Length: 552
Ligand SMILES: Nc1ncnc2c1ncn2[C@@H]1O[C@H](COP(=O)(O)OP(=O)(O)O)[C@@H](O)[C@H]1O
Ligand SMILES: N[C@@H](CC(=O)OP(=O)(O)O)C(=O)O
Image (cartoon, rainbow, N blue to C red; front, side, top):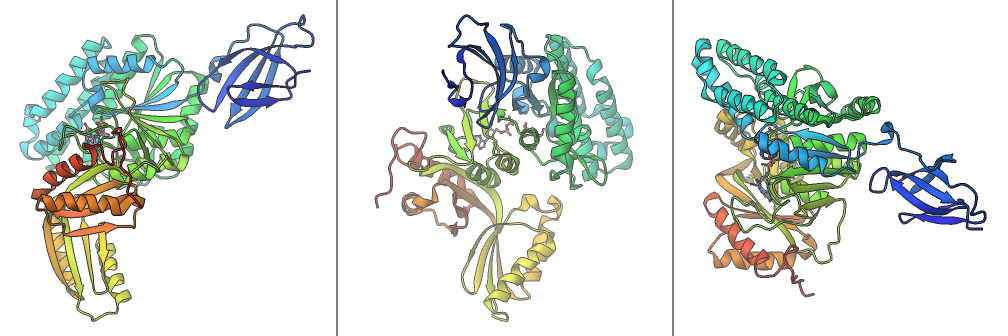
């Protein structure tokens, strides 16, 4: 008597039957399947249908029926992945239609769709807010950006054939808000977040209406009503743990009642104390996507952009940048933190915690393989993965006046930054001195940057001699630091040939990043020269076909 069979590579035992047909509810490791079987010892007996589930490799028999036709009912179709589309992917009605087609071209996927505002809308909303502060209540309707936003969204509604009713309330609300700002003559961080939220609120309403119109049931969600709970740090809020159960309960609860594609606003949340709308920092829709992926334990998180994945450098600096096929969460996080605009700096955290692969794809070129980001990857051939540039950083050389011992000195320096709430990016120390970089974009207020810097220097001068150096850039070499000697030898040769003086270097703390500090005005040239040396001569590139491995 046969005692076992194989299901998609998973061995199931104890079924004394012979598999005839298998239908899968979804792809991947977690699936439910209908197995049509016949008892091989009694071939004339009826075909039987077994319903089994496989979760993380464990197969379980759920139900057995003496029937050839055993259909999966609706609630068995589980949500499978997140598909996030950035502003460039939903820039027009045409683009939204293409995105809808793209989603429908994966019939096996049951995605949660996360959308950003239509391209340029967030910047225009911010600009409209700035103008409203100065223009006076009666002139709000003359703000050019308001007219552009209205025109874009109304035209998009018409072109999608969904009517403007779905966004009418928001268009009206936006104008009222701008009048309020004009009346108050101020734009607080809290109001800025509320203001920019109109972008995502409108794009998702238009898109969900379009999916419904073409007969694909969809349901729009505002993230701040759906359980994305954040700190009250307006313009740069952080996701709180309470988000995960809340989002899971809401989305899975609704899905079990009706399988309507959830279309969720990216970038937005709800402050846990204020209950006001917050935003997750620019580019924050990536973080929304990974947060939802973790909350629901989905199989994959896809972020659809306007580039063929994460590239070997910023394509705006060098158009010859090439896609990187694989990255680890650590590499991607480091790359994003050190300035690659392609991913939000904190977006890898939920994906890493949930161990959910992130796929970066191009909505303009869906067949391109993109970049897959996972916990680990084969590093045996990896040398350099990507070069990232962060401009306009401030560097401080701090030398102890020896009033304190070494321990006391370092502690005092860092407690000064902690007290002033300033984050430090790159650090190098010797016994009596420390060099570090500060990121001015993280300072409380752009207008106060110089005052804040003066204050930092004043505080540090109580214990040290301080040299403040502005307009510096960090060039981060993301890759396999196990090959650091090779990377450094090659990199420094390139820089020396190009007459560039590296002012600071940090290596070792991060296992995937070597950071070099150079002058702002030399930085782009450095990136191009390094890119050419590492990626275009067949050396050290994982996307190139040849690898040069450092000889031992
Ligand atoms: N290393 C990099 N790889 C890919 N894109 C990068 C990189 N560095 C900067 N970029 C820029 O990031 C953009 C994609 O990010 P973003 O604008 O946030 O996308 P979206 O709005 O579609 O989510 C690209 O158009 C590209 O100009
Ligand atoms: N609309 C927001 C959020 C976002 O993530 O946008 P994008 O996915 O287009 O980078 C922004 O512009 O920052």
